[in-house]
Every structure is written in structure tokens, then in C-alpha cells.
Length: 282
Image (cartoon, rainbow, N blue to C red; front, side):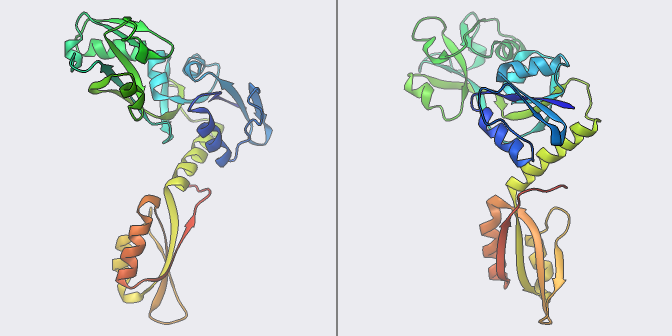
């Protein structure tokens, strides 16, 4: 049975469980449940603190897990990411009071407060900067006001929280993060259950990013139409009862669907329809 770690709370929890449901796996109905067995799919889910997941997977106690790239790298665990999941995107950035330091090269001798001490310590070392790193579990933005640090490093989505605290983002991002599937370093993904799990998750990602588009077009315009809707491999083209017309079916990116429909209509296509994709295998 495949043993999978899932975030039990925070910004990763609900999107991860929603994606697993879309992939056909059972998920808990009560947030107090710590373990759930999905016998039909031969999977056992363990709901853990997001920060602990990389440690459990890296130790080999669990097969794979879902966590954030920032948490994985900060843990120092013997685990590696094998699939990006496209949600919980954020960046880890430095911030300070306006008019002070403006770049990591100016941090020499300063104190930096952060919840990601592992990542920040390595980032400073990579830039040859010797500074003191103070680990805080939360509310990092108050560290400067309370005199604990001169600079903070915190997860940023919109930057509103930092601005409200009178701080400004400085320098380049330390790390761009998102939710990822991880495994023990060097473990491989040859197992049948692991391969099945990854295929299902990849199928959800594709289903979220694409729609199926159908349209009718004159046979003489097929090549131009197909150039607009090349699909993942090649569109399906079928003759219609009315000679000289064909029906085309192709997957197109959801974010470009409306523009493609406009272009197809201008080309002469008619009966243009889009349909959501709920699951797929590629």
C-alpha cells in the first residue's frame, strides 16, 4: 500500500485535498482525522504538519508527500521534488525599512529574522555574506519593529502585509515556491502505485489547464484552423454529411480559449464549442 503525506492545515491543505479528490482518491471528511485508508486505490494518507512532511518522506517512513518547495528546501531532509502541482505559489523575499539596505550584499554583520532559516542561511552563504539568522515561527514582520532584526525574510504573495508593517521588499527573490510532490532522494518512482499516483495527478493538472474545443470548418481551411488548434499531438478531423465541411476536435489551453474561438470564427469556423475536461491520461 502506498503511504502518502498530505498537509493537515494551512494554505496547502485544502487545495491538496481537492486535487486528490479530482484524481479519484478518498479524502477525510473530519479535519481531526490523522490517517485515512483508501482501500480501493491501495493508498494510505497521513495528514501531517506541512513542515514535517519532508522529514517523514526523507526518512523513508512515508513513500511520497505533498508540501511546499520552500518547506522542502528549508527542512534539509533527504527528499526531492518530482512533480510541480501549480498551486500555493509564493516567493521568499527580504524586506526592511525604507531607506536602509537595498541588496543582500549589504547584509554583512546584520541580523535577519525568518521562519526559513535553512534557506536563508544557504542563500547568504552563496553570496558570501556573513550575517546572523534568527529563527521565528511566525509574525516575522514585527521583528524589525521590536528590534530583534534589521532585515526579515518572509513568504510574499501580494506584499500587502509587509507594506502594512512599514516595510519594503528588497533585492531579488530568494526562492520561488509552489506545492510539489516529493519522494526520498534517489528512491525512484518505479513502483506501480507511485507511477499510477503521478499519472493521476498529471491528469488533473492537464484537465485544469485545457478544454476540449470542437468546431466545423470548410475543408479548404483545415490547415489554417489546425495551426490555431494543434492540440497536444494532433487534432481529430472528421468529414461532415455536408460535403466540403469537416468537424475538428482539439485540446486548447483554457486561458487562450476565448481568443482562439475569436480567431477561428474570423477564419470561417462555425459551431465552436468548448467542453471542460474532468480527467485524462496522456
